[in-house]
Length: 160
Image (cartoon, rainbow, N blue to C red; front, side, top):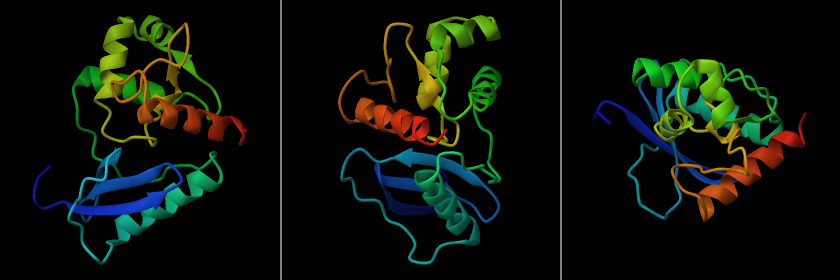
C-alpha cells in the first residue's frame, strides 16, 4: 500500500476489518485474523465513514447494496473472476469448477484469483465453494478463515 492511503480499523461481528482508502476510492479491505497493531487515523474520511456504514448495514442485513467507489487492481483475469463473483446472489454459492467452466479456465485459477481478492466481503469470494464441501478461504482450509467463511454464508442464507 502506498503512504497516501488512510487506514481505518473497525470492529465487526467477524472481527476487526482494515480499510485502505484515498479521498476518492476504497482500495482494499482486509479481514484481520490476528491482533496485529495497525496505525490508523483518528478522524475518518467521508469515504471511510460511508464504507463502515455499508459494512454495518451488511452485518445487519446481508442484502446490502455496495455503492462504494473502488479501485480495481489486479490482472485482467482476476478482474474477470471478481466481476463474476459479484453476480452470485446473496445466499447462494457456486463452485470453483462451475465458475471455471463459465469463464473458460481452471478451478485452480479461479481459486488463485479469489485468494488475491483485495476487497473481502464486497467482492464475495466467500460464496465460492468446492464441489465436495466449503473449500478454502484466504488460502486456508481450516481455522479462523474457514470459520469466517461459514459465518458469512450462514449470515447470508438467513437474510434471503
